[in-house]
Image (cartoon, rainbow, N blue to C red; front, side):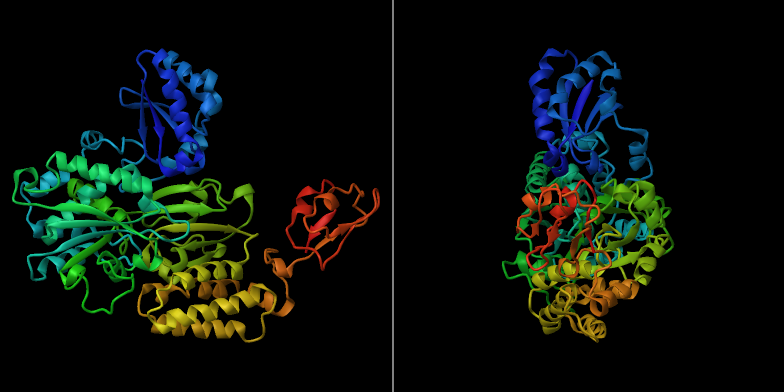
Length: 583
């Protein structure tokens, strides 16, 4: 029997290290039971997760494990009697979270040991690069990738084969392959999970890409806020070198490729490929004018190719299984699978990989279980700060690049932030615009100044100081910024504002005309009131009010001084009689 503890960042944050250490302290007393680790399997809402394997088959999966459960689990595993730990076993409902997925980029995540190259090799790893180097030309690889229909998973959805071919055809001996792992979208963690859980699949995909374009150096640009991902990737690079899978004359062939990691400082704009290149060169991360494109003049003005982590994570599978197998999944315009980070007000948050062509409802309700506390679904933000809000009436929208684009949102890198009826849409637009305004590099006026003006208007609206014409002014600014911004950050920054106005204009009008927040979220537009008939005069709210805004005698109805009230809402939570309302 082998016990495996999930140790992705989500598991560690939930206490997986304590669980692992507790099992490790006690395991010596149980003969025939070993202990290991794995990465994130995607069910982040159930962490810490402990899997038990017998003869490489999953014997049991324990969820929400505490360090105090270690001995119980060891006893159950040793005796093969799970009755005593039935409270820890995953339910059939939660098993459906994985059974409804098709995992290609995530195929090894949460299954193999991410710190062991042998575990990756035993799972079929590095067979694809062996296949490529033993008999495929660069054009052969490009044809397979073209047949697969693989498009860039970083957001733009540009055909991967076309980018590879453009870099391959560019003149010059010195070329570079770059992986964009600068994942900056709020609520997105797909790239981090892949690197933490299966770093060798990234390396293998990049090796195939480097061979195809003729690059001898590969760089992974990863944000410094991902220390565990960097640590595991660095070890994977060292282990691959030790087995002659990186470096000089790989596997005894003429192909040589070095790989290194560059830790970025976390600037969102560096997700744009030319800004990333500037940062790699030691300059401030600011986008370049295009053309020339990186395929002609990129890193150090040499031909360069940039794809994100998820794109490279698909490559080895495609080479091993054929482009036709990948293209058989998805829709006419969007092939294969896509990984999403399902977050927000959702019951089952985590990583989801589904074939293109599924609907938003399939993901949010079929896999994610719907909103927490069965609240009414309101919208989902797709594509992070660069994306848009899709309302409930469009839940049956097919997930592909064209269909999502028609709603005003974008696929993006795969963030899915779910909202319910308690979410204020103008406030949500303000949140994302505040992010993009702060992350603007400032190089172009439309983005640098336009986003700030939009943020000022949104702030005014949410504070109850909106005025007639603000909505129209926002729309005018949005279009001007989209048309005039230099890079993708500015060009897409208006999307959350445009889509919330498009689908939730009534909420903007309520804020401006009625000075009310329908979602009761904007503090300046809500008041807390005590119902004198229901108030028992227990004095609890008065005692706990941090602003001393509540007064009244014992056993008599209390009142709230609206001038002193700081709108914290603590009184509503404390009142056992439901006498305090938020209006």
